[in-house]
Length: 116
Length: 111
Image (cartoon, rainbow over all chains, first blue to last red; front, side, top):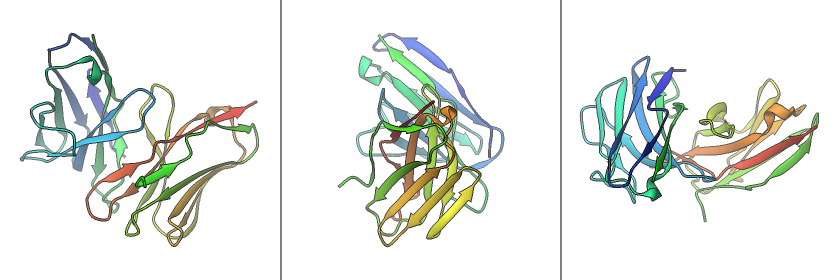
């Protein structure tokens, strides 16, 4: 499986500000996703990061709030914009490595965000 | 009906016993099924994937799939305290290139 890193690992931010989270993979991957996991909850898919084009957002998530970039096959960023305390969560990127199983996802270590 | 359903637990199992975790799903066209383990404060870790009906064994873990009943389970033999975690069932959506996660079952292995 791919080695996935995320930066920052955690941050405490003031409401109204924005934070950009980076996801770096050590090999080219076919797909990258961004998830949110709120305290005590399961994973919620925010969007699929598409290489070279606009991300595909899930219902309830919009580009203005969660802009995503994926300039190449190993890197993506998620920005949480105009943050409020409700955005406090763990943000996770996941990847689908190249290989026979085109839907097996592996997760990065996550970014723990606290908004005051 | 939720797309992927799991009993939230907590499920308490004595050390050395078999832990049985269950999951049902609604999409009859699903072809790929996954079990992830998540320790508190950590990200999910893939422990098993299964694609065909029947059993798939990997060490102390056995995944079981029954597509007719839309049911997938995970058995953990000789449970250890280190198996205490939340176990997430995930199923691919036949209509889209993504997987859906259940809410997770919290497993506690008591010494």
